[in-house]
Amino acid sequence: MLRAASLDDLQAVEALTAEAYAPYTRLLGRPPIPVTEDYAPRIERGEVWLLNVQGGLAGLAVVERHADHVMLFSIAVSPRFQGGGHGLSILRWVENMARDWRLPEVRLYTNERMERNIALYGAFGFQETGRRENPHRPGWVIVDMAKQVGVQT
Image (cartoon, rainbow, N blue to C red; front, top):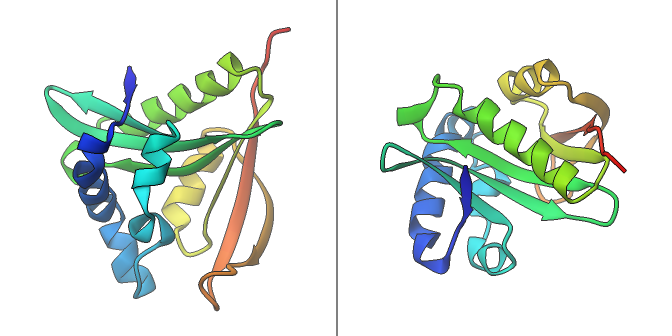
C-alpha cells in the first residue's frame, strides 16, 4: 500500500508536509517540527513512506524503528485527499509495520494545541502517556501517546 520514498521524492515530501501542516502553522504562529525537518537523511534510512492514490501523492508516514517500539514521527495527508480515510489507512499501515517488526507498541507525540490530532489518535486507540515541554520550541507542550499492538509470537 505505501512505498518507501527515494531522494527523487524529497521535494514532494517537503511540499506535502508543508501543505498538510499549514493549518497548524497558522494556529501555532510557527511551523511545527515536521515542516522544518531535513527529510533527506530520513529517506536514506528508509523512514519515509508514501501513499499514492489515483496517481497522486495522497499522504506519507515517517516511522522510526526502535528496539522496543515504532515511533510515528509524522503522518501527513494532502489537503486534496483529506476526508477520504487515508489518514486512518496510514495509521493501520503503521500498526501493521509494528506487528511485522514484532514490536509491541506504536508511539507518537504531537503539540497539545493540535486537539484534532489528539482526538483522532485517541479514537484510533492511542492513550496519552504524558505531557512535556518541547525542548526545541520553548512554550510549546508535547503530548506523548502510545498504542499497544498485538504481536504474534
